Length: 160
Image (cartoon, rainbow, N blue to C red):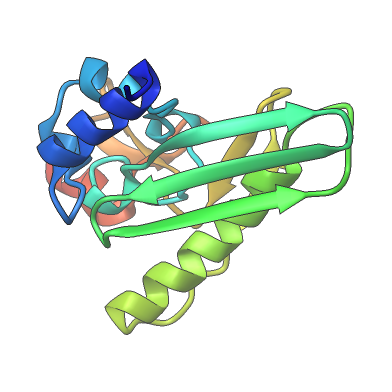
């Protein structure tokens, strides 16, 4: 008979169909596949209100390597990065993902590749900055640049 893991994978394939549309499923349905919401980690550098900011995946680290695998439903693409280095933090794969994803996104959308940079913030990662650093200042009722901002200027102006 099939193992529990292979039965769960087959069930997930049946639910997701040929094109995985992870957004329409509850997290319990996909967590068994070792995925979680990477969007909260800021790995895409996209405005937090944009569908291009959504990503799911998994980070990995063990003796001698660090890795990350990510799926981006807005463009139906997946990227996996593995390094053969071991550092005191697990940021190299996220740093690389920041640049690779934005180059891929620009190619898919037919737009110019943005200038992105990555800043380390914790053991697991940091922030991919592609210029989406605006936040709505509630007292001033206007958009301001902020280290904690995650909106494009346009998204901020529209929602502030």
